[in-house]
Each structure stands twice: as C-alpha cells, then as structure tokens.
Length: 298
Image (cartoon, rainbow, N blue to C red; front, side, top):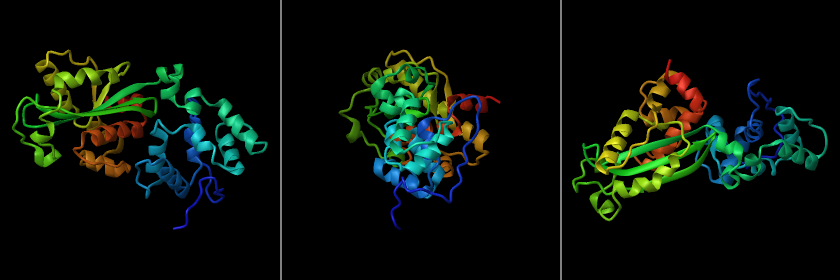
C-alpha cells in the first residue's frame, strides 16, 4: 500500500469534532482528530506506538494517550491546509501562511503540550487527575506469592511513568507457570516484595485511585503482601475495569483479552506490564478517571 504522509490534505474527510462547552479540546487531540486512518498509521509507525492499525479509533487513542508525543511533534510535519483545519477545530483564526499558523497553535497550547509534561513538571500537569493501573502475577494460590508486578501512572490523559518488576515469592513452588510463564529459576535471585514495593510506591504519589482488571484479586494480593512485609498498604480506593467495561460498553464476557479486543488495545495477556497498561487505556477510553467513577457507581 502506498505510504501517505500525515501532512497530505485529506479533502474527502469532513472534520467532525465533539462539542463540549465545559472544556477545550487539547491541541494534540485536535490535530490528530483531523487525520484519516492512513495518516494516523504514519504517526504510529514514526513514533513506534503499539496500536491496531486496522482501527482509526485505536490508533487515535494510542497516540493521544502516549505522554511522550507532544503537540509540537504532531503539528510540525503538517502542511498549511492541515494546520488551518486544526486552527478551525480549536477556535483560532485559520488565516495566514504555514509558519504563522504553526506559531499561533503552539502559542495557545499549554506548556506541557509543547515541551512534554514529564520534562516541564508544569503546574497544569500536577493538577491533572492522576490514577495508577496495577497488575500482579502470583506463583501459587497464596495471596502473598506475588512474582511480578507492574504499575502504569496516568496524569490527565497521558501515561507518564511505567514500572515493572519480577519478585521472589516466599515459596519455591510455582503453580501458575503455565499461565504467565514465570518460573522459580527466573525469580530466585530477584528482590522480595518488601524490597521492591518501597521503590515502586512513589508512583502512587498524588493518585486518586488504583485501577486493575478484576480489582478484588490485585487488591487482596497487595494488602496481603504488604502485611507479610510489614509495610503499610496504600490508602487508595481500587476501581475495576472489568466492571467498568460491563457498564460503559455492555460487554460480555469481560475478560481482559475480550475488552482489549473490543477497544483495539494491544495485549500480551498475563505479562504484568502489558496487563497494567491495558487497564490504563481502558479507563482512558471510557473517558478518564472521573467518567470511570461516574459509570462504575451507578
């Protein structure tokens, strides 16, 4: 298939952006919204983003929620005609040549959209809603037998930090290697939960909730492991993306692979890092943490 540059005007596509008087669409999202599927595929390839290229919505969501891709990185390759469309979408004057249009757009964007929220540490990034997606894998039926953990921190609509660790469980016997592929030989020289958790817990600073798929399982593992290690468990509410998927999209069944397949989210199931990131994307696809709470508490 012929490669289509993202800046190539797409005259056949009508710009249809959701109207919301309560908020202003982010510049990055607005720029991505005007693109056709082939144009989004170019960006996915260029930035190495994991997304189902058969689905325009899957690529759009993956690009929007990738915290390493700034508004400037999206806008700078675009031609004049495309920049005019973006100006129109965010309520700016679409007059002028390419350089003026680009400068106008970047001048109106928040600092974190121009330079990246992690590097700037701006006040607006700090004020954004924060949640952390969490996933555990266990060695056996004991809730104290965590052998892998992953956390994905989300600020606003962007993933800002990821962390994953193997853990040496308290027993050598592995019941669930056939599920996650982890063996005693892989983790026998890894740190215990009591050594790992203090390094990971700063990712929870400022978070309003923890999120997991089938959250009751991960909550019990976290509480049991903290108790065994004589550590204080986080005083954060747990929200469940399994319940969220049922209420927002009326899905059945709602195993993590089923929800990810419906939303076009890449998944390597029972890899803790992949499962945690998928949970984060499910919350974002539902509308973010505030929408998550509204939907899940009907």
